[in-house]
Length: 251
Image (cartoon, rainbow, N blue to C red; front, side, top):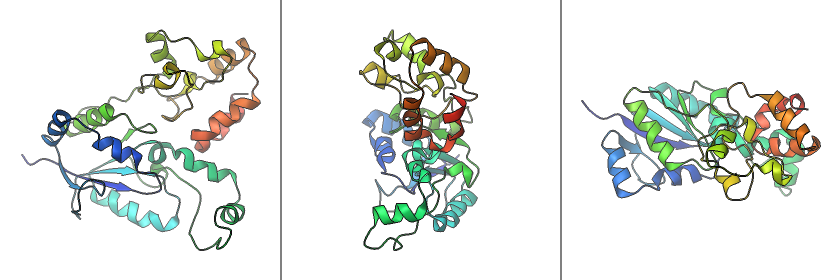
């Protein structure tokens, strides 16, 4: 049976997640290429293809003129996978949605504010149907390989639905709240290995919300440690601008 053809595409993003997808050992690469045939990947090959079975899309949609291209990709592919925060949850690009378009254009391009097209930043699933996600900023390379192989084999992508706090507890990390620092771990999807809290930082939400986030638990934790609510807004806005309502719901 022929291997499924895979094509990579990018919209508004830094393309860092595609670079992570390339950051494979020789063994991992051979393992992946044993089950797929990459027919288009601008970061790695010059070839292009109008025929593919799986589309892997990085980047959010920030221009209306990009929508027809995305719709064509969706129509061609049997499966569409979102790669990274920008495509999965809009990510940092959603920060522009908190500003008026005119003000934004004048700030970014003061000499020619209307030269470049822009619109509200949207995740890919706000435009077309998405079959699977690989969240993160950047993605986890091993998770990328696992998800692609699982889909090719007809299995569940196996993306965690529990919060980052679970991974912190497994690693016996000191809770960031014990240090007097706001952290979004209680409501953010795990799968990163709690790398930011483990390295002395905090979870800033790059993998997006867990399904049905427990906001009551988040409030209880903040009250327990006497953490002010106004500071949590900026944490949520960095990656979760798409979910503006959570800023108010958690208070």
